[in-house]
Image (tube, rainbow, N blue to C red; front, side, top):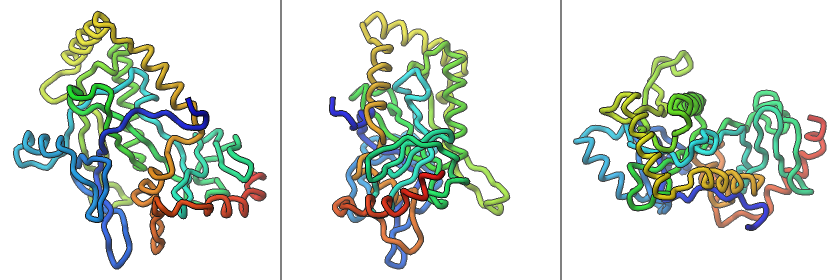
Length: 297
């Protein structure tokens, strides 16, 4: 295994609740009020839709796509949802610093260093550019075509991160650790806050699949768990392999993925989004200028 390269769940598509649009010559993120499933191929006109997007819309019978049947890959909630305070270099799209509020991994001129993490609001190094950022990997439907191929939902929404983290922990607890066997559903919910001035904002929730009670879902999870075990499916070995893969690299995002993440979730008004083909040495030059004052944090 290549050291320094995080081995993440295989991704066959994306789940988004927004898109990037061009406005006045600038590419800016625009929120939506429904899910969209795309491939990993992006053209000048946007991301190409995944065939499952059309299938789920037909099943929704003309309604907006606001729920997606899913299963988790892992019983460990933290393997399914990885959330960090993240700072990306907006010029290159490379991760610059990733922390959890206690410690962080920061890229500097001498490589990656482990430092205290004061959180985004108190970090002089980030200067307000750090955000909570999470990735959720799920199997859409039953994974009949690819049992280990996942769709990734990326988000910087505190509402989504907090809700998903709570749901995953609760479902894992009540099912006796059979999170990967539960029939679940991603659901888009709306709410209004004082900061939104009455305008609905949308966040992602995780619930038991439509038509089932929690007790029925747990019974199905136990039955599926027993079938998998009888067929030789080693869930514990899968979890161990996933944990080792995540720990193998300092940062989860690759450079080309980082450029897309910055464009959609870390935009700067009036600044051009990073382009995957232009990832040169901009990160190092900027970090070298900050590394001395950052050492005092």
